[in-house]
Length: 109
Image (tube, rainbow, N blue to C red; front, top):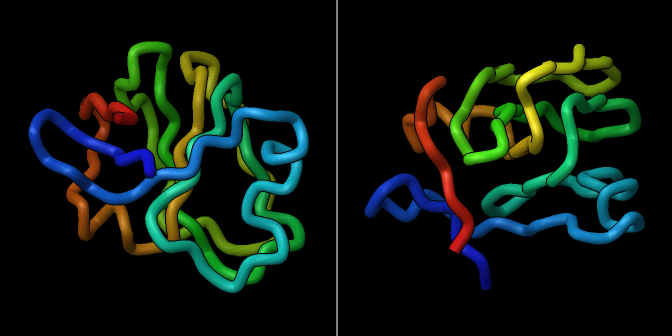
């Protein structure tokens, strides 16, 4: 199991969508998410067809958070973030509980 960490703090479990099918599926068809989902090589997301709101963090190549969209509701299109190279998704409210903020460096271990 992979973990999402910030420094020495373990924030949650993380799924990494490494293949095309996993990236396309994302969180579609799910009623919730334990932990988080990381989408490498990604600059924008949408919530079309999703069943629950999500927190979205845009990460640069080094895992630094360069932008956050809290509680993105279903059926929305997000705008692309030029500096982003990966996107982290979690259930709405998770980033507040984990105290994820712009500037944090997140890592998958």
